[in-house]
Image 1 (cartoon, rainbow, N blue to C red):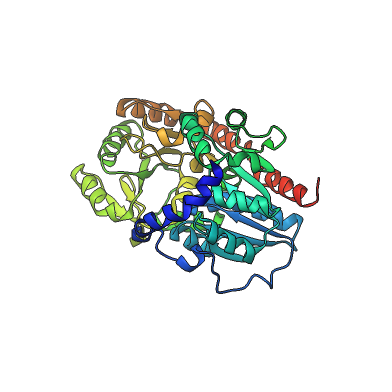
Image 2 (tube, rainbow, N blue to C red):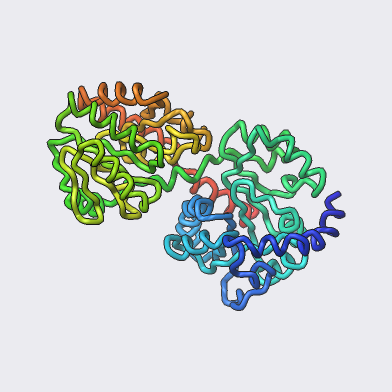
Length: 419
């Protein structure tokens, strides 16, 4: 079936190409997506490692691997590819240690063939579940060593994977190393036919990226919002419509017992700042916006500038992460944990189930509703030392998971050296 899929994939591509081009995330870089590069790779030294992550978040997860590769083998040529335009923009702005940034070729034989002929990688590293059948097949046939990092196989998708592999052939069997995030995911890969020799448990590189913000950034934010050390600060990060009104009401009730408490709300979308200011005004609370270099003592400060959420978490005594009191699936709860803060979140955390499992009881507290949120924060603030104790537990839970980037790099280099 794999040979048949490779035969008909060009026809399938012709049928879906207009849909792909209509997608604003995929309409850029079509020449590269067809395997044609204006800039030659001949000037790049050998050996060459090609790492691919689909989008911005996936590329960030590759950064610890790239850093470790650079430290151990600085002479390597490192090529990075993404699928989306946002991934390209993020990589140009934030990624370091790479020699060339390209778009992934469409997974059709002629585009993949051109790309591999031009790049001539020694190792191809794919991220998460980026299992592109034609790319994997042709790379393997050319003798390129294949590695999967942050390997992720959801138990809910096992049947779908089996059907997909029946159609395109089993790409897992061609990998030299399958570096899985956990034992359970390694077991699921084995159930799908992966070689036991290729399987390794390396962990998740996203934990390597969880570093506290720089002290200068924290100090600048503290000065601008007039943060006073003798007061308490509750930070609500990545909030959505339908959450802020409840959070403001909880805050009002908390100030009855904790008069020294201030509230900072960082909405997921900063253009919603005027709406939050309106809610604070309706509640009779002072309100100020960080973009105006103001903070509201005894009221609500709105963080309406991008890139300052981590410094805000660092200033907090206690944190609530939004997207979790409404059915949005939650937001990132690891960032405040990495800052050493107690992390509270609501019942809707479907998109972050692994993070919830890591933190609940270890610095993270899941609350069912507004009343539970009020009671939990009240108890934490009543004994201020409790915030520091629970926050340190959260920090240690996150830092204990670091090191996957180095482990992945060692496996990649081991393949190059024939180990």
